[in-house]
Image (cartoon, rainbow, N blue to C red; front, side, top):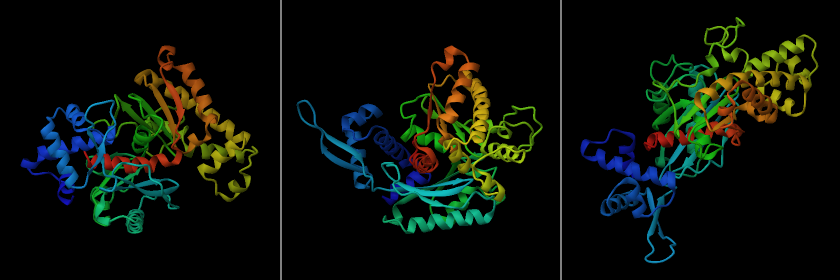
Length: 405
């Protein structure tokens, strides 16, 4: 296994690069389609039966593929079905959020992680934060009942602008002197990948969520900030440098409010978790009633507290969220007109408000977009909830290492 693992992770020699490519294609097919026969694999990849048999045999010797025996058929000779060995390797994901950090791992088959370790360590733009994440990731790996040499990679996602190709983070941890992915690799001892949180959540929806069969989909991550994930023709869209989907910094409002990006009037200044908290505090200071009075007096209100109080029918919180959802719907109507998606998924912490978010947003979309276009788009709340980020972190690092995307 070590040799092919190194080929997956590093530049294979010229003589082996074609063989490695074919093996990646076979693994990719098994990931996407499940157990398959030699004939199905060969037809899908345009390979002869002898060639397919040769590479499947090698993958079995290397521990990546298992022969699951005869496949049931209507008649004739029953062919053997081959599938991935779930214990061939493991991929660790780390999801850094503004309110905490999650760590989990998946097996080679990509089964949704059963154990997710939550750490009450919010995002901080400091070297100490990276030291903490790497230390806790190493500790998490050491405590798992799996062979440590079978850990293939560590994938980290975080908010802000990220270039997944170079491994650089530009919004956070840009002061380290080298790409963030390289730092993680050095400190944990495992190959590392990084990605933007919204793109990771979008990918999780593609693999295990509401967008499993969607070819064209938009994902709105409504959390402390707000971001957009884009799927076009079944593929996660990144743009030239991986910086697509930064809708939070679209100049939308004439409010003169300074965004943390340095510009004024960005979408996030009025539509985001930060904005929701600010509006709640402002309304409370002006005399509005809310069940969050005690926490507001102590300065201890978190975004999750606001969503909880929405679900408990706190009228102030509901009114603020409804106004925000209506404004977001008007903006999203433009995205619907541009992309004509079959599906719009609402994710992030604020999406946990359910219909308190989706109903006014849907009404505003229908009112402000072309009827012929919005009738194509189904709007759903993410069923993955807060797990979307960590699932995406695990799935993305597997897909990058194995050349699936």
